[in-house]
Length: 68
Image 1 (spheres, rainbow, N blue to C red):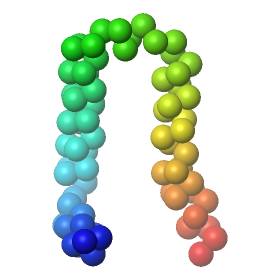
Image 2 (cartoon, rainbow, N blue to C red; image 1 turned 90 degrees about the horizontal axis):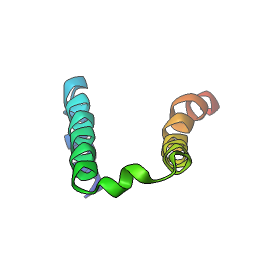
Image 3 (cartoon, rainbow, N blue to C red; image 1 turned 180 degrees about the vertical axis):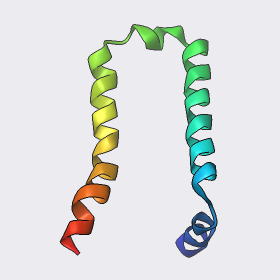
Image 4 (cartoon, one colour; image 1 turned 30 degrees about the vertical axis):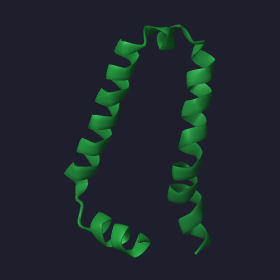
């Protein structure tokens, strides 16, 4: 299964990834418009979630290649 996903992902280009990110942004915007209480959450929760989600990609991009 993972080999199939890997083969399919290798066929994607820059614009495919950017359009996927843009669609995720639009989906998040729609969810916030449907549930306005999400905006009232303390901003530190959003900042913490942002940092936690960013740790792994930053590690793979900056630290992992230097150890090879």
